[in-house]
Image (cartoon, rainbow, N blue to C red):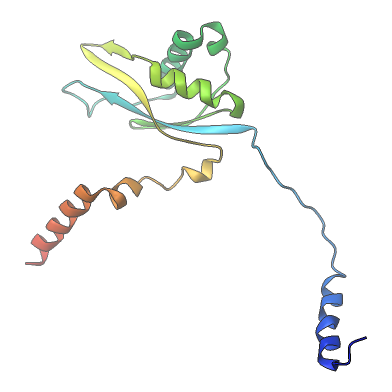
Length: 158
């Protein structure tokens, strides 16, 4: 009952928008899985020849879980999503991520042909999309690599 006719006209389009129907709304507050990006670290002279495969990742992760939590650790399910070069991506049940990360961090690794090999956690997240595409982030914030790249750029220009 406003005396202002423009206020009544502004209300009319809202009535039209409210007539639409919402088909489905879904909010995921806690995902069922969590993800970890692991990297293989070695101290040997021939570091370039070492690459991870699914069997090696499974063996290393199982050894770490067994050492840290015994049979309970071995029972933690894990899916190896990808193993490429020295990197691998693992999916574990979200409630088990803390135990998995602690086991991998505490694992002393293995020695093969005089070379120490161990897995280190590069990053963990509840969403795989949070980890994908972040490979170059360290270079953005690392001043040493930025200075090195800018010096190389200056050399190529002159």
